[in-house]
Image (cartoon, rainbow, N blue to C red; front, side, top):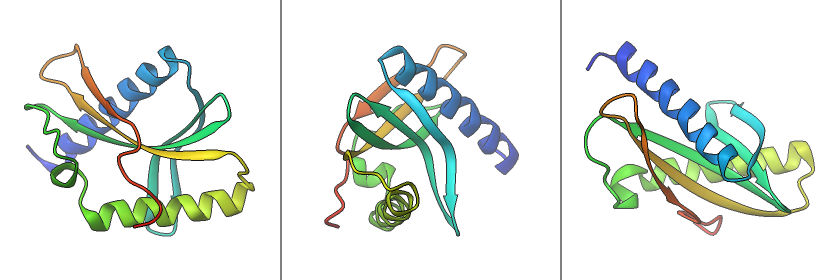
Length: 122
């Protein structure tokens, strides 16, 4: 798959993941929030918890081994970006880091939602 195809697939996956989250009671705060070279795909809120969401989209089977999906260095960048987000927006609520795997072999996505996939103590 070409790099452009991966970008398009990733955008479709993020859009589907956002809809999935909204259908489950989450409110979007930011999409593709960036700090320097770091990015958080989705920042959502449910009740009094701010959730930083990494979205991974695949056409093939979902791999539920977290470290195979999001490397340790990627997890560290997400955590670093979240710290900057918390500082910038004065977040004073509980936080969580989630991973949503989106499997899109066709136009009917399937989701695996890993809550607390990483912790800021890394």
